[in-house]
Image (cartoon, rainbow, N blue to C red; front, top):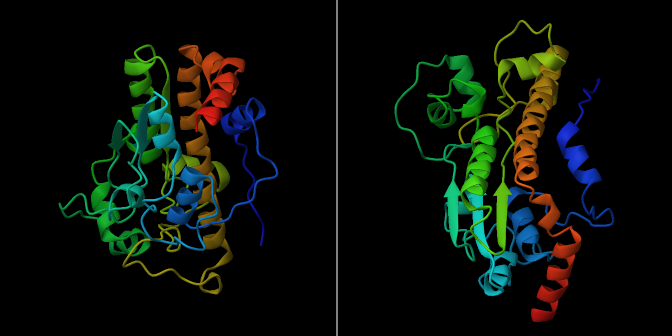
Amino acid sequence: MGTIGYTLKNLDRFASQSIVFDRAYVASHPTIPNRHDLFTGRYTFIYSMWSPLPENEIILSQLLRQAGYTTMLIVDTPHMIRDAHYFDRGFDGWWWIRGQEHDRYVTKPTKDSTERREAFGTQYLQNVSSRRFEEDYFVAQTMTSATKWLELNYDQHGKFFLHVDAFDPHEPWDPPKWYADMYNPDWKGGDVAGGAYVLGVDRPATSDLAEDELNRLRALYAGEVTMVDRWVGKLLQKIEDLELFENTATSERGIARMKKLRTYH
């Protein structure tokens, strides 16, 4: 079986200008345990697993808030906010972009085909039923929300911490059609089951899918990744336009602040 390659233009450029921890190891692969590790800087899976963020853990947002930073969380990852996982702890404010996965959000029934419902699930399709343009997709909403927050706040605080968390390119792999067509232009079929990971949706085994169906799933994922890269690029461009890169944690001024914070802690 072949693979599909794609280029992360904006994320690769961002990495080239950032501090990259190339000797760090991922301790927790699943969504919530991984966020535990990111928020605490610890390998938490062995004792927290899928439980809420442990109350006795010191997390970055709390530490920064105590040091006088204005802290903001913008997120479309549903598991971080619902079910009392407490990832908003330590933030002065938070925005949640609703509707990802099987978030109990929209109740109005849709007229989607049986094939599409079996591929993506009824709740997800209800959640995206009003989607019309690329700007309506979740990563676009998340990055747009972050740019709006920056426009309102970039010069209003002595120092601030903005945490932006995008669920994509997590399943469901459902980018605008033209993104998938970049990698699989000859596809003439419909929706392929296997690109969703939501309650009530059966996931076929690889052996149950034909080669062209597998290629379509690969193209859907590659298209999702490409869309994420483009919208992250829009946020990075806003940060550049506001001249904020010169005063981030990786700038000389920012590194000095982080050293002071470490001493403070």
